[in-house]
Length: 82
Length: 462
Image (tube, rainbow over all chains, first blue to last red; front, side, top):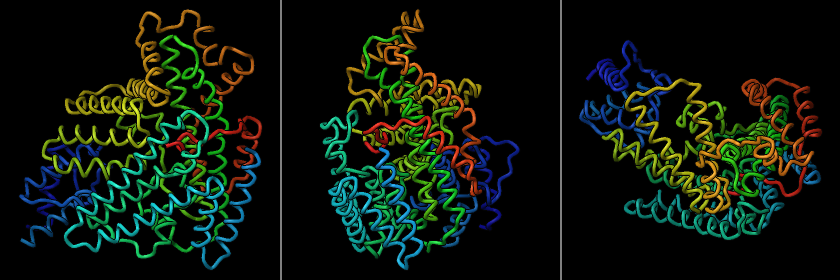
């Protein structure tokens, strides 16, 4: 899967999860950019992404994600390794 | 008090001199930290060193073990937690929370804070986030570093390493801006918090029954007192660190302006909440992440239960934690159903609910809790009929002239401070050289400060 393709899919999940009509996600998008993205919503969001890509993030990965770019890089790494 | 302050200034000046002049600045910090603890209570050094050595070697043990990482981690964590429980029980028996310093209290100087660092260290090694430190001295210094020892901020070992172990570069602006921040913190503690202290004590330790409004106002007074006391300490700790060229993390971000409980916890005791989030909330919620509501709900319950335990063993702290669990759960549900309220109402409700929860936090025992909550929920007598006798005289400890003067002065100073707090904080954090700022605050402390013996920082009791 291409990097840009992953970013687009992750972006769509984020927009759908937080119901952000018209919001544009890029690699630098972080929790600070979306007010509803907090400790309570972080893990369920990650769970949606895991379901969409049929993979599993480790605890360290989940807690180290700072931006969408980090999530995309991690997915790219996992999917290319398969 | 004054003599102790002079000793401290002399100690700080000598430490700074040796730190910047020495070829071994970390050794200077190490010995200055041990000297600081020894001055307060020499046997507290043994507890601190014992804990630090234990975490240091246990971390290595976890790291080198191929098969028993989990078992060793659980064992190490249990030992640290058990020790914390033992000392919290001893503190409870000493009644240290209300009274003055006792031998047990002094012995446990900073224990609650460095115990969190050790637990996080073992956890991070277990999950492979960090490698164990190779030099015991570095690890001990990160736990013993004196500005943060008594009341934090809470930091993890990797953050302490980044902050502490770079080569010191002397900059005059660090010295001056650090002194500015220190004076700002001392003003909060000696002028604001210590002037509010007798007022909140009058409600929590005075005669009952009270009007509901007066009892609830006591909760607000204590909220303000603990805020100025704790954030004042943090300002001083960060100011001293800045003088050494060391940047510690911020612990408060205008929490009294929060418009919801969620916002409040993002702005109040930030480093503890970050710790709880990273080492209690996330590890637990990670396994329940498929259910958004349940993972958050159970995460909140566990996190606030641990937070209540960390503050002290006892039903009053547990009830304080339960209050915040309920508040956060209600907010979570409201957020889930996309219910929104105006910001001004949110601010008002946050202040009232936090103050109400603090009635449990401050109350000496369940009897006081029962009396005050009965007063608060006695709706017929909630508002005082005679405001002078039922409100002003109570918080003015019976209405003596000097007590009423203290009330009026404290009210004026607190209101003015809160009104301009944002600007004052920005100025206190500024790197710009400002002699006028420093001398203004020193003058305000000299004129308006409360210099009583035995006054301590509230959070040093945890």
